[in-house]
Image (tube, rainbow, N blue to C red; front, top):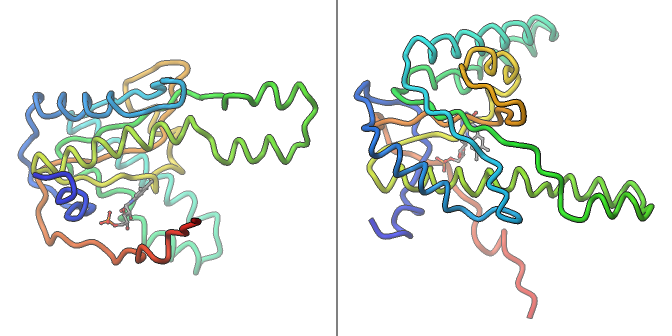
Length: 210
Ligand SMILES: Cc1cc2nc3c(=O)[nH]c(=O)nc-3n(C[C@H](O)[C@H](O)[C@H](O)COP(=O)(O)O)c2cc1C
C-alpha cells in the first residue's frame, strides 16, 4: 500500500479476530520501530510482545481492579461515568497480541546545563513539557501503527489503562530496572467497521509564516 493511502485509511481498531499474527510480521513491525528517529539516537524503547492469553487476561483483570478502585474513590456519579468508559482501557484483552511499550527515562539534552547555569524553573519546566524521551517513543510507535495497517492488521495505541501501570508491570514478566511501561498496543486482524472520527482541517492546524 502506498504511504499516503496507509496514512489516510488507518483507523484505531478495537475488535479483532482470534487468529494470531505470525512472528515474522511482528518482527517486521518491531524492525520498523527500530528505524524511527530518536533524540541523540537514544532508542530508549523496548517492546514486549505478549501472545500468552493467560497473561493478557491477567492484565485485563489488573486494569478492571484498578478502575473499580478509582471509581470507588470518586463521587458516585463521577465513578459511574468513569466506569462507563472503562471499556476503552480493557478491550486489549480480546486481541491476540498485545505489545507493551516500555521507555527508558531520557534527560533532555541541555537540561543539566540549564539547571547548573541557574536558569529559572520555567525553562526547566518547558524542557520537561517538550520531553524528547517520550517524543522518541511516539515516533517508534507510529511506525508500528502504520506498518501494522500496511500489512493488513489493525491496532490501537492505548494509554487509558495507564492508571494501572504499576499493576500491569507486576503482571507482565519483563523486568528491566530502567525501562518503564508507558503504553500498550493491542494488534490483530481487525473485525468490525473501519471508522475513524473526523480530523481537524489543515487550515486549522497549520500556521504558515512566509
Ligand atoms: C497516545 C494515544 C493514546 C490512546 N489511548 C487510547 C486508549 O487508551 N483507548 C482507546 O480506545 N483509544 C486510544 N487511543 C486512540 C484514539 O482514541 C484515536 O487515535 C483517536 O480517537 C482518533 O481515531 P483514529 O485513530 O481512528 O483516527 C489513543 C491514541 C493515542 C495516540
